[in-house]
Image (cartoon, rainbow, N blue to C red):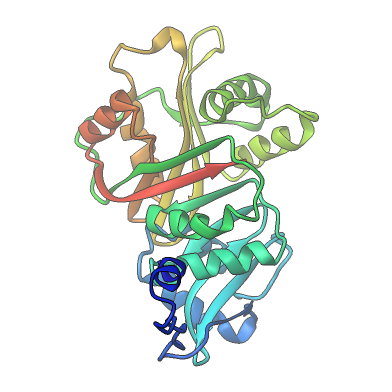
Length: 300
């Protein structure tokens, strides 16, 4: 518009950018001294921020740790206003339309690489509005994923055959986990070798975060994981029903069992689901889940 005005009326002065009256933003990797301030951001929404809450409870610090990531903070007048876990994934915390585009530009200029971005939709999509200028092309953008939660007993009876899986059942469970992964993200988790994914599934079993129901022949009928656990919330991931058992109305009772198991660890159970998966959303609602917000995921 300014260029057009200059051509039409060259005697008009062009508007100059005005300084932000609140002052400039600054960024840095958080350290031990920032732990309480990061908790303040996380506790504003402990269900949506369960990923970072789980990390903080495990490490007891906002400083970089052996977990393999770090938290970048966005400050104004030395006050922490927003943050982003930066590791294999980017996970925004407290990022809004005021901070998202500026934060995304900073992360882009830092040259970081990552395999996904996930979190509350507003934060993810506002980060992406500028970060995309520096990033590789994603193979999928899912801007609207209902974040659903339940903090009561389930509304339907739990399936009696759902239980925690055992270490000796890893080889039975692994094909079901891989099938779920491939259905969800479009490629096999075994690309480049199976060791890493096998260790991840084994770790979930070892921590009693893996639940499944098995047929008499050992085939997995249903499985789910307590993917992220904090003292306030559990985020369920990896929900999968064997194709031969779909459409039979089994998933609600199995999810009720997942809720009972998860609520033995934390009062609130959450999950996020693709908006087009109407059948899954209906099953979750039968169990008692309600939508509490919206997530977004960007996959690379």
